Length: 395
Image (cartoon, one colour):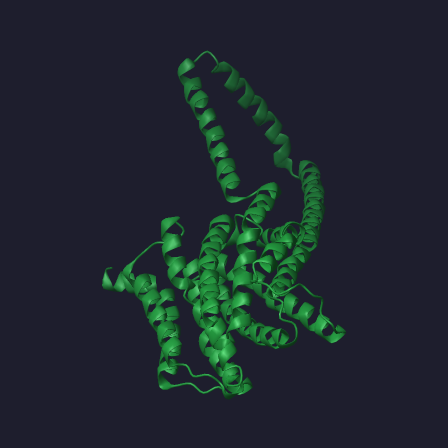
């Protein structure tokens, strides 16, 4: 828990929270002119394909450096042997000693008792090496296995993003953030069910403290004055937005646990960059047709292309920063910390979204909402200190 990866993961959580809230505010502004949740989601998820050439280029450079270093190491070793053979007088005496040792070994061939320990030791060494290879095989996934897992995870990640963006199109940033933060509950129990996280009293308390904070923010927040003109429209879409937000939280919890399961401890089992690159590739190639049934069911408006170059640039830039960059950072948060800590850490978007809405939209919040935001942060702290609490209190 105290390694450098864990501490770096906590810092990345703070960075991802800032990027996600900023991206959500930008997305809300985009929806004012271009209300296409599917297009925004499809573009953001597909852009992650850029990680594939980056990952393969990184592997090529690493292999090139390894080959060069191994060649230089072999040359240095051969030079050392050559110089030591002619420069050390002990080496000439070693020839005589090797000859005597060989004669002594040959003279002991008649003794079966002396040979039996050697015969028994030989398979033990081989077995040990085999175990090392097995452990290495269990730890590292092949490129084909990474591609297969990317294929499995691509639809789940796409719908997680789509549900969140569709909810954002029907509610405010604060409401979507609050609903998405309920994923901590799903992450805890799915992680315990799949054996990716242990279940103790401190973690359960952390989740329910965070959930209580989410409930208080839901009850205590007030709407901004700039939304008063469209209050009827917001009321009509609020139930659909709430359902989509909860669906995003459920799929987010499942994806987080599966990502940790496939990535392993500290991301040592799989290259997360390649994994997300394959998710982007499969989204680009295989999920474009989903716009047809979503449009036919009335969930998605009729597809259209942005009508201005400036809007195009904004959508693409938001896709790169809000999806490609932040989602990769978030994946590192999951594999470097734990799914529960990463999920509850994302709940910190609630107080940040509150501050952003206060300054951008002039929204005012009650004391209940502010207290709920403090509880969300308290749940995140308790989750990080759950092992310490368990040891101190003997839970």
